[in-house]
Image (cartoon, rainbow, N blue to C red; front, side, top):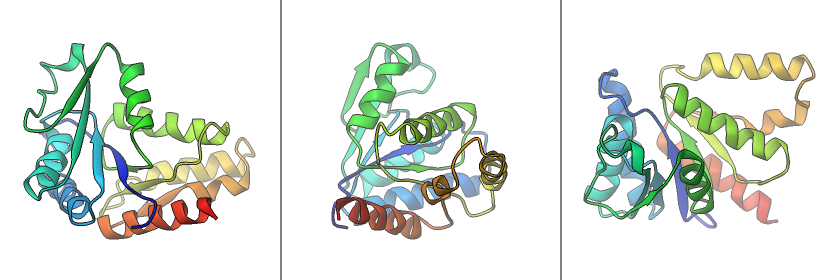
Amino acid sequence: MTGLKSVCVYCGSSNDVKPDYLRLAQDLGRTLAQKNIRLVYGGGGVGLMGACARAVHSDGGEVLGIMPRFLLQKERIFEDVPHEIVDDMHTRKQRMFDESDAFIVLPGGIGTLEEAVEMLSWARLGLHAKPMAFLDEDGFWAPFFELMDHIIDGRFTPEEFRAALVHEHTPEAAIQALCDRVVKLGD
């Protein structure tokens, strides 16, 4: 896994989701731990966030949670791993970006989408070259990719941006796609 030491995972914080999504988050967590890749995430102990972090931690992997103070009660911090408590969402997102080599986006809601799109926007503006992979097993992200194709086809974003849009269906494939892009960027 040359060049990939730390992955930021964006994902939902709801416990009221299909069990398959929670299992996928756990599978990703176990895979990160097995590959000795640190998880950087929003710090919560609920939903896909908590499932992924618990899996990394229980398999002996390294985890860093970054939680804004105002979400401590809502997202119920996962206390078994190191955390940074920050003042606001902007600081949280910046710290997650700073601590990561790449991003994986699991199923989630508007917050997950907002975080992923902001990182794509930063990449589009040339502010970073960190790769991102969207991960699902059931086509959860397919409508997003249809929208991105529509935006590119409408010439609001250049054709070459398609290469930044990685959609994978297993944790192993997502991590490998990120590794391939990290190595390519290092050439």
